[in-house]
Picture 1 (cartoon, rainbow, N blue to C red):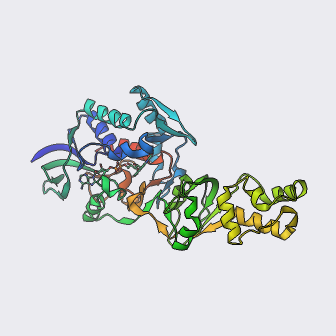
Picture 2: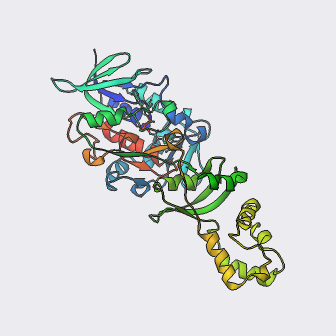
Picture 3: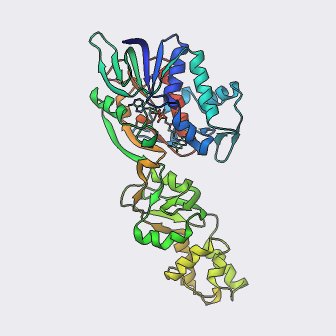
Length: 395
Ligand code: FDA
């Protein structure tokens, strides 16, 4: 039996951050992961360039049944602290849009920084080791059995992630351990995920695959995001769709303002005066993809007329339609392509300061396995750094 002060399950963003912090405190730390290399999700994140934080990260960018839960960890280890860390390691990075910071070269640079920190802190890594079960030891602490070895530890940190991307080793082990120790686990759901469409909508828009439109997309609860949507051969994707997917529930519609930057009614009235003989179709095609307008006309959603043939009522109807285009997704692409898992270990069961389970001394849950989900844009990694840091100070 291998003896450690701390065993961390999961060599992902949260687990590696936590392990390094605990190691720096003089704790003997083991990180156990079933993968053959650490940080596999980091490596594929941000299109291979890892959007590792967001300059504007704040508690309002997170979904959690207890919206106050993230305040403590985000304020104790901020995006500026992580930026200071990567600066110290000489990382080359850039600001993309909306506060998102990406590596210039490769996401491997972030994994290298975390692994260097772990090395300096004396952390030991056990890869290709699948955790099979965990039991509380009679004399205190925990025994962790993997496919390769058995560990005894005083503190056990569960950083085993959520259910997204099963191909990359996602397992429900974190939720199972929580339930085993009597912790409530909130229902999980794929989030930051593309929508699939009903067959009739898929047939309507199949020619638009690859077309992107800058929109304002809102869900039925009133949440809205102004970014691009992208038509795909399966349905709808793009940053605005991924964002709103976290707020969408089965059976609901999403409303898409296709021209959020202008008042279409005013524009159509002006066009009718200035260029009345021009068709509505050609006029609107200067603002939106022509193929999309052709579909709306073929379905009689908007009239096939010259601008000067449009009545005031018709202009208002066209403007209302374009500013409130509504579509009811069939579902989402699910965990296969989702970036994150909504729900998870109920944060009411955890200390917001240390991430220790209130019901099990020495047992910690951090990262995606907890019921905290960030928006798209580097917020999920920032949460991983912040909670990994917090647990690493005490475990
Ligand atoms: P994470 O899932 O990273 O790590 C958990 C680890 O536990 C895994 O290595 C797994 O192998 C291991 N494990 C699971 N079960 C086990 C078992 N039984 N035994 C042993 N090991 C086990 N976020 C962001 O902020 N910016 C971005 O650019 C992106 N981009 C992005 C792209 C894609 C395609 C995805 C899927 C996700 C993102 N994300 C993101 C989200 C981000 O990747 C996610 O929030 C973090 O990786 C979560 O970190 P964790 O450490 O909590 O879990």
